[in-house]
Length: 299
Length: 335
Image 1: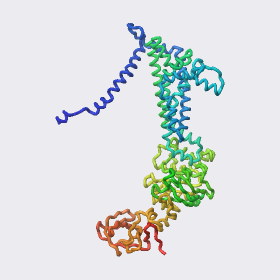
Image 2 (image 1 turned 90 degrees about the vertical axis):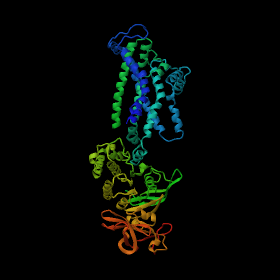
Image 3 (image 1 turned 180 degrees about the vertical axis):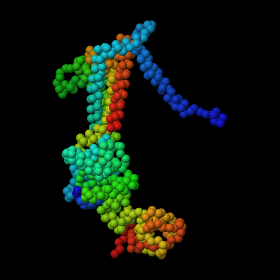
């Protein structure tokens, strides 16, 4: 007995903690602590550039200020419309491409790799090189559009009506491959015998799509859109490089406005409150969405 | 329903693996035709070629003397029960059964679809499951739905690929009886694939025995059982299985091998003496394994039979029923 006790090593639980410990510490340091700190700051009138001034507790004042500000709702509207169009286009084009790539043809693998490439690039890089593509004088985008339909000289980034579409196009170009890949995984999971059964049952191609393909791929597509939705709600780098929120505030997404309030106007307490509101919004929407998605999956 | 003919059908997979070689068979209108053979014999491939799910290399498929070799599956109008249930997983039993009726090639009014689905559901005793989703069913129920989906319309031919193989013994028996009744009621043409001999003998009007992609014998269940043309065919039917023994054992010196069904051996007295290896009481019959000059012989006796292991036993054989085979395992017919 005593010998056994002496050589007793680490328990399974201890080994477990040893493995996840470093990760937990890291997460606490760079995710949880800043979050808690931001929540704390959101109840104060802290200005990060005013050194030596002790921040004072102001209660819900920052939150009331954010929610009563007309401009914030404009930014939210810009964000919402950006999300709506990017998600819609990425769902339709992504599913379409997945359906095409799911067929067997020569060069299928190579084409898939090429289509996926934009996703691998850094958003900032994408932003920079699309500013060149959108250049009204020498840009390739304008050239191609004019080749098919003569619009003369137009400035995608400079015009306040076109700029919101400019960022939608770039985001769609970059992230459609993501929805496509996930849809493709869904399509590959559909057993072939279902199509054979439908074929023998004399179903049309359209019926096969509605009865077999769509219900099988829908949970996958919804998951892809959840990821894209969360990402695009926080969209920052690509748009900043492309338009910096301009012209005027035509493409000023909530996240860009937040960065301006925090690091140009240095209203740290106020922008912390704004950040918390954004966080709660996306968290709430995300949860509702997941619930709906699970309902659809169970169907 | 239609008469279905296959003429000189050849099929290879990937231009290498021979699946079917020179298949010739005729399934008459209203006939229950069973294809029998071990796995890999080409049973499923034959069905898929008739359905049009596989392209054939050469040969013809005829429905009522009309050549449909190059037609698409949809225009052939056949129904297929797959070995895996292959129900549409996102839909209810009702929708699954109605699916073939909703084909644009039919355009039935909703009322008629409802009547047909309810009728077939009643026949297969799944009426109380119509509102359930396909994935909520047990294996037996799923297979009933799959069979129902095939029976809900009147195609040229019903193709069934081991539809009962994944069910438990009891359910298999019930469904087997139901299937035969349904076939008789509808006067349906059915091509049925199985490797289960009980299914073959109870269901079939005619049996085709397949071996490595070739049809080796076609006949009624009685013909296949009583009059097989080779050892291979003789082993397809019969339980306990046929005894294949050297001819010299029974002083048939010019004959290489003989086939002897277990029920054609009489125990008790006779010119041959062996030792009991084991007895197996199956209720209505008893299977006795006998060691006779170092060969194991199975004999089946009506009712129960009492004997102990290693006991000496005398037996006789019914010489009229002995099947004689040559060196190539082919049947030698008496002149």
